[in-house]
Image (cartoon, rainbow, N blue to C red; front, side, top):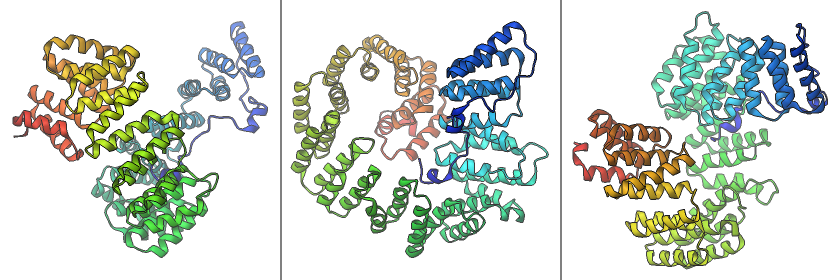
Length: 568
């Protein structure tokens, strides 16, 4: 999640009930006014009594059954309300979709569906529902929604599609059309189409100058176009129109940092942190803005006041440790890194601590540090051994890595994580015998280990021995049955098909893998298959994309060396 995501705040409908609603969950439900037959009455009575007993799932299902029977908006609304208390998002979505199908004008249904789609990352569907909510509204703010979605990682191209569809509709009021145009400009900015985004801004009349959204988009376009002075002016105009919108303070801070206006940047940063005290990670995000532009002292100024507080986010210690390490203050860096507790940042903090010692020429101290950490954090034992192995390999101490891994696996032979790591390391070093042996041992220990099944199958297929292909395919197929949506397994299935000469099947699998896992290995496979299918233009386009996208691309480079005709 980007820094803007902490501030953008997608508006949504909370499917969890409030404390007031819990007192009488059905108090605001619409009355049942339509005549019922005996079966319908029985269904509704069961639903009503289930709700009174607190069995909200059964109540919701009963109301939904009756709603489907009588096509009643009132009943499906009751079903949705009861589903919220059942704490089951799938049931809430089912009832809300049925509500929307029976009563398309029901805005609460769209609100619920938008929130649910946002929570699972389906931003395009969330936007479609938000458009239903805001259609032709004189105070719509689709631009805010799109800004939040983009900050949350939404694909800008997929967001642009429903926006263009809505803009093509006749009889849109002026405000809504401007709002949609600004939201579309945001998606184009995110895609890097800055000229097109600027054209959309230029197409707006002077009336749009009174819309904060206009200055939000103008600021973002100016920042991405490396025009920080213009961005700062636009952010100030937006803040004047919407003084409670913290995004403008954030954008002004970014512009000030780029301009080197440290006094103003500090002031805006402090004001923003004070305004949003309830978002502790915001402090870290702003510190990162200073770090990215080479102002570590300013970042430290923001972070050190919260060191030692009970609610300090662990990432604060990670960032302070990184700053100290970059400044050569290794011992102080270790003090910060050691304060990162077990959790998402734990392993990175220990890796960075050991790396700081290695960079200072203290490899033995780094190894001692990791040994001590293993004694303190048993759950992370294997991961810490892997970190030590990677540091030794990077230092050219391959024999010492071998000894470490052999010793640890002799101590705990069924450590699946370490055995898999040793197998993959051996494969990368060209030691296919050790890799195959470790993977077979791991599969004996864990027959349903999809990663091991896939790795062994891929290794056998990639060796180029036709006699191994049947076993390779069987192993990968077992992995696929365990994890059918795993793109690495899909890539392996495609690679087996390629080795058999079944190019169409190979293409189908590897295109699926590329759509989910666009890495250099899958790219190399796809390029070769496209070339052999005489789809040379697509192959060359993908080769160019891979060369631009991946700084390190050993398999793509190896493909070109092996088959130089592809690059000609």
